[in-house]
Length: 483
Image (cartoon, rainbow, N blue to C red; front, side, top):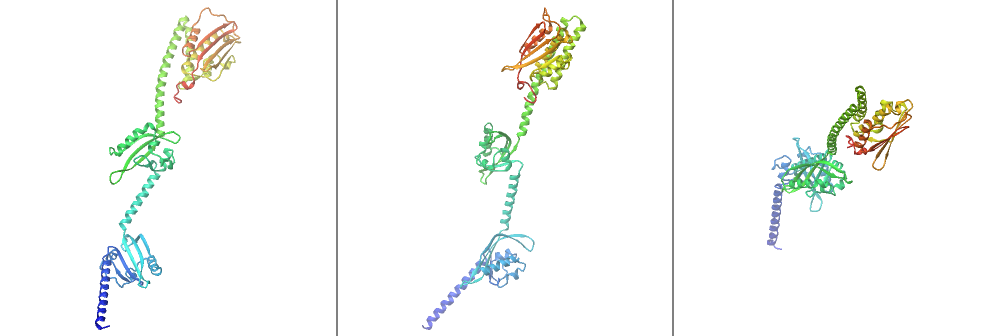
């Protein structure tokens, strides 16, 4: 090989070396100018090269020379766990990373850094040092933390709200419901999430609800509130107060409804009770007006008949007063019962009390429980009073040995009340030659208010009065509490 050939080889080698040096210099320049924080260290953690971004991220000038300086001398306060990470990478050759770790700088500010550490190897495969990549992600992490905090706050409000809250898709499917929503609607969560609000809404309330939802989707309204009913699994209606708003996507398209419900069943029940009470009160007032008019008419009739057939003013007064007292006794019972009616047994006992009543052992009263409407109670009180007055003057109660038995029974599918007044042990009875006021009053009373009849039999052994009346069921009568 001649000298010229050797010179050619030497020139080529120098050119390759120059090219390699230029390439390395270009690579180092590109690395220093990289927009990421990059630092390369040897096995002794001495800087081989560092990017300007790495330096500025550490709070140093971007052109500060670090090559050859030991990392722990530059940052003497570096935490021990970072020293352990460096040692592990250099010893084991592993790659380690973190998506966002908090660092407190000397000024006390907290920064978040995304980092990655990996070994670099020599041509013979040995670990020559490590490469550290860093990226300042403080703004990103803080945004994520704010989002997570907002999500936690939303979740706490959503799940723990005293109101029922649900997210509902534009087509009506339940997307999310809280516990209170399940409690109010009477559905378990999994069953609600398989249904739509249309399926659980009462049919009578559905059209109005859907129309409002369509207006909300069309942008015609911002929100709406209605009172409506849900149907539970058992078919029971549950009244709710519903407020609905719409969440839209960034492009303005509907995303989901927010439905907030409150249980108003108790208020609705109270309103219904109040309306029913007001209706019953109006009926009660009308009934009292009717009864007062009837009572006044009865008093007027008693006065006219008494004065017509009794020429002696003193006796007329006594008879009139006695009949009014009989009425007042029953009025006291009806007032106590709020004019809902009265028990037949008490009406009989009150009417017959002035004549000794059951306490005298001369009057026996017996019969099953029966409830009288107010008008029927007043009518029978007058009837019993007239029968007892006649017995005291002419019949079984006019001597010391006579007895009166007042009994009744309820017969037939239409509740026919049959009463019997039987006198025994009194003076011999003689049939009257003419019908007196008492007889006419009894017959008219039984025919009118009680839609019945009365028949008197004047046996020598004693008077018998058989009476019959229609007895309406208590459920058909006016009551403030039962409707």
